[in-house]
Amino acid sequence: MSVVVGYIPSPAGKAALDRAILEAKRSGSTLVVVNSSKGDTPIDDRLIDARQFNELEARLSHEGIDFWIERLSQGRDAAAEVLRVAEARKAELIVIGLRKRSAMGKFLMGSTAQRILLQATCPVLSLKAPDDWS
Image (cartoon, rainbow, N blue to C red; front, side, top):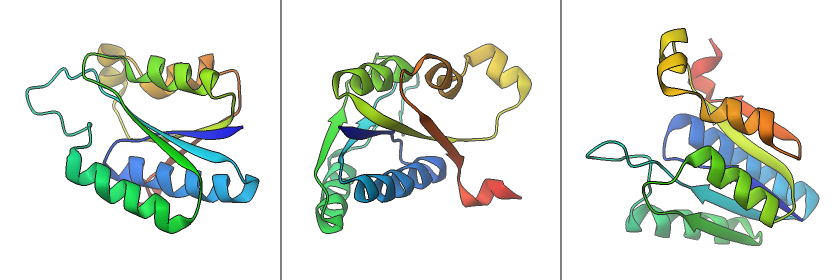
């Protein structure tokens, strides 16, 4: 069994990763980190680069948990990839971070989080970065 976390290098992504580590430790599960993006911008800061990958790998090793990092190439739908990995890894939990978006922003761009929440076959834990709690 595994805990799957949808991760991008942002405050919401960090909050999701922190909680996913805690949940994986609690359950003794493998943590699977999914980093994916459509790549729909010229400079895509949602995909981790080699330095960020190495830092993430070092952190997870230091945490003393079993883990796997899936860094998926651009052009893939993030929600579909998180759901695919969760299904393949028989996830017991998916952890995602949320960010504030206007109603128009959700309408125009869709909602990755909403798709994961509605289509997942296992429980989904969604949380905001501490900055968004106010």
